[in-house]
Length: 419
Ligand code: GAL
Image (cartoon, rainbow, N blue to C red):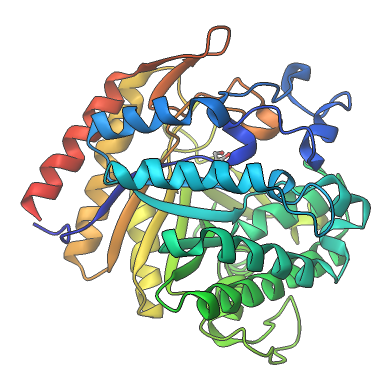
């Protein structure tokens, strides 16, 4: 069997999407503005995971899972500049202890899209100081929680954060500016590099990486050289430029002109992969914002509730492409939003089959994290997207394992035993 011993079978969440009552970050403020979130929804109580984490951890354990990826809420840990909250630190400490007591490996993300309000007011990711501010936050987290955690993700989906917030204007701060987008990506790269060094310095045994969103980007018409060129360009910029920069320690085009950055090279102990879908690209002069690439969903393809193509083979293709870095790989997110749980079951089987195939073909995959443990607040899509293995009744906060949750547990066990 292809799955290696010790393979991490987990689920993933992020603080703002599940904890509830995160009033002190930029998203809370954003949600108060009209027209930002589907049907005017707010994150509100979310899944109340901040108080119900024990129940949720018990459920993971009952399913037979051995890993959990979650994020720390920066705005709780550092509610004011350089003011760290002991109750918040203790809270995450308790969570980590509860996981470990049940044999569940914590994979901890330092930043998953939200920032404290004070930082937003100071210019957020546009302010070059964000690099040292993130470093200060990392330092405190490493001091307070570092001994108990092996796996760290510095930043979740830097390119998604930069494009949604600064190019497409769909997320806070709602800007549409290419120069700003590139600047933010640059700051995120530098922040990642510093944070990596900080964690390793404090705990040399830590394994630190990014959770990078990769998409399959294919030309709509394979006979059109313009479509092919457009797809290649977008593929490079969105998928590879950031990862390559962090690997080589250089600000690669379009983030810079290849100039070296101290301490950035080799700052990924593992390659974190978030994979969801594919885009078909045609060259289109009416799409200047996306460098003349127009994105479409492949005609006739299976889609999820949000209209994204379900394309399991894409995961295999990505894992093969990532082999060139010669690093272990963690699939830090992969999941589906659907009201039809049989579709989720199929999704899981098919994607895990592609992981197995990739393992057989030499990809060094060490873990898989289904997104998400719970139905939760899906950013601009609000609560209409249902990604959870556990169905949540948001009126009562009751959790109900879907059949797919049990299937995932069985698959993990079956593959695990064969390992
Ligand atoms: C990722 C993101 C998650 C979650 C998921 C489903 O891009 O990291 O926060 O929202 O997509 O869309």
